[in-house]
Amino acid sequence: MMPRRRAGGGDEGQGLLLDEERSNGEGIRNERSDAGNIALLFFLYLLQGIPLGLTSAIPMVLQNRGVSYKQQAEFSFVYWPFSLKLLWAPIVDSCYSPKFGRRKTWLIPSQYLLGVFMWFLSHNVDSWLGEAHVKDGMDFSESKESSQPNVILLTFIFFCLNFLTATQDIAVDGWALTMLKRSNVGHASTCNSVGQTSGYFLGYVVFMALESADFCNNYLRSTPSPKGIVTLSSFLYFWGLVFIVTTTLVWIGKKEVNSRSTFDGVTETRTEPPNIGVGQTYSLLWDIIHLPAIKSTILILLTCKVGFSACDAVTSLKLMDAGIPKEELAMLAVPLVPLQIVLPLVISKYTSGPRPMDIYLKAIPYRLSFGLIAAFIVWITPSLIRNGSVPFYYYILLLASYSFHQVTVYSMFVAVMAFFARVSDPAVGGTYMTLLNTLSNLGGNWPTTLALWMVDSLTWKACRLPDGSSIVGVDCSSIEEVALCERSSGVCTTLIDGYYIESFVCTVVGLLWLLWGRPVINSLQSKDHSAWQVVDRSRIN
Image 1 (cartoon, rainbow, N blue to C red):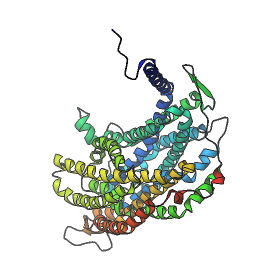
Image 2 (image 1 turned 45 degrees about the horizontal axis):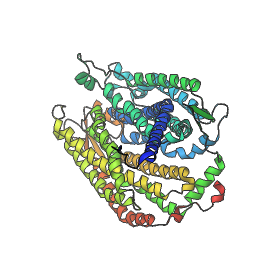
Image 3 (image 1 turned 135 degrees about the vertical axis):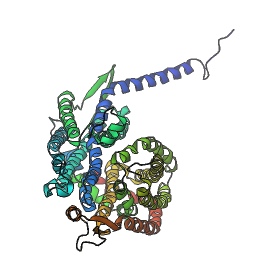
């Protein structure tokens, strides 16, 4: 009896199988050889997420201290460094000490300064947040001016934290390209997204939960305590030490090499990308900005999020004003994580064609409508809270609403990222994409700051006395006036809430923008690739 052959026939089929096994074996060896580097990248990105998460937690802490929305607008400037990092990214990429290492020249000082800033903050943040007199048992209305949150100083410190974090991000992104083997470079984006998300989760959700006495007493303690398991100062102190210790270990233990590396007999050369220089990089950006197609794109990116600004910037703070605990709002992010992982995978199937912005345009009316839904939820919230207790079905309502919102947000995000990838000139793809991402981030930052700033200006309040009269000239627009009203035995009453005015105006502006923006976006999508190419190629050769 003749032996049966494998499909594909004899020695040739066996050769194909051996090639496949060899390829799989090499892939496993490559991943094994880079396992330590992948772990290091993940940890560096995780560290990056910690200050970003804390920055998102501070507005909620400030809201509980009675700051105005104009002060919240001032603090919102701390988010701007990540949107402006393109301004100094060429310097970070081009200016370095060869002996110290191209990436470590900026990474090590940035992380040391982050640790020092956190350590410094841990010793002063309580007094800057206005907690000193509360700890002494003084009532807020009786406290002095020094007990009020020092928003300007907090804004400066957290702006510096985010500036250093953005600089660290530039250095880590560049190092990832040479730290990993060429076959493993794809893991860098995974380390970025998973690491930064994990760090943000620790700095925002975990901190808010462990800092809350109610959450700790209800879920983590058998004996109630008036304070949470951690405080902001202790959290900052711990992570400040982590930054300093781990940065020292990276400095001493991780060498930045530009040579041949060998693992299991396999040798590969890892080389740095060429340094085109600071001046040439800025000149290239200038050339890109002057393309007619890019000028229209800039106008679109800087104005497209105005219609969503009231909803995105103010709603969470208004829910806190209505009586929803800040830690409960933070915990809503947990069940949304699986949705945020799945959505890009699903939406990308519809944005892979030549017109990815069609999904973007379809999502805008739904996202605008959510702004009105969010305003309605804020309006009914006080009537649903009984004796300080929030019913379970209310959280289900919030979760369903947030899930709907996430679908619209990710539809627009994935679509615009696909559009950026399609139109970017391959010859200068990295610089091109960074510029477009910077413009997109700026288009979300300035409307957020403006929306927060305008809430108080559009709100009418009065100080009502027990006899029904009002104190003339006291409109409860500041902490001082609220304290004055309370000392007069009055109560600050909101006559017209500027949030609802903003929500309506933003929806109208968003619809008008859609009428203008739809034909512009359709025109941009139909342009030939030559319209997006940098004219003078000789400058980058």
